[in-house]
Image (cartoon, rainbow, N blue to C red; front, side, top):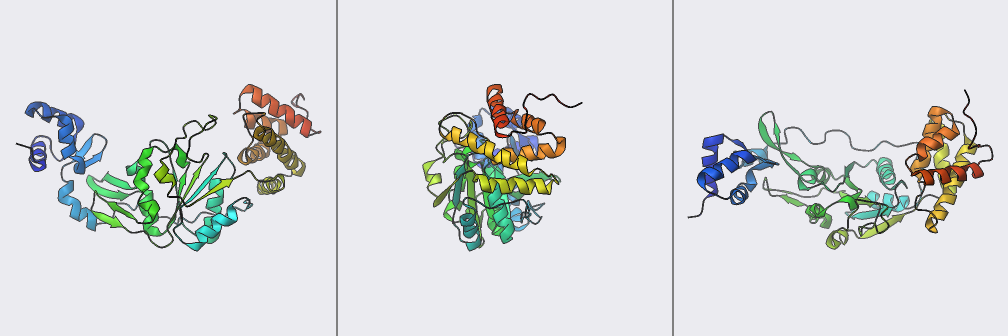
Length: 357
């Protein structure tokens, strides 16, 4: 005769109480001659975490459904702050138009690291006074991280919304950052990417997207993996997932003229007077990128790294040291070639100069 879930839960409760663990279930299975996997499948709806079950969840579902989360997942104002150093370039105007339209129009932005993909989305939302919820995706990101799950708060098990549900209910822009690092667990967003909302099966509630909700994803690849090995950890994303993004924007690095404005703005914000240094840095980066695109080198200097150099210069007041500490992330050969190139670009820079005492 097949075991009923009610019999299993009542038996476990009588021996171990309401909150049980993996070791409790294994001990019960050993005593009663049952298979651990079979029993845990019967307890799926009671699971509250890895190796943890609460046998009163079903009794409290209606109460949990009616009551709000113990603590709202997000209570603060989620409109990003405007950054005075921001300079628009690339696909910014198009991204801003999509957000301004308030239409549900999932958007995929791809491009090399440090070229302003995420920053541009943040600043578009800031200018439009739109709430933005950013989720940093990793291979470990799963449904519980995105949608939500039960949490133990003050001894009570309550439902807690994940960032996706918060964005749906608030009509916010959901930014999936570095989405190409995701595993197939990201497929829990399929119905959401169709604009249909999501059914929270654990609490029996359907969440309808509020007006203005949209999904924007950023990635270093197009979801096909990294053939050149530059972005280790990126994965081949499911084709059905990628197909749910109507448009893909390819973000390039800014032109030297635009990049110069960016660096000058950062320098001004830091009270650094270095117009010549900013110009030399943009010339330096431009040469490196052209060589990179031609296949001459395997590394590139990003806009973000140039900003790092300006910030380092504001701290150390030493161009050589600023460049050195900001290129230390590269291997010795690459760093050496980058430093030698800058020495040629900036006539006032002496690579071999002795440090002043």
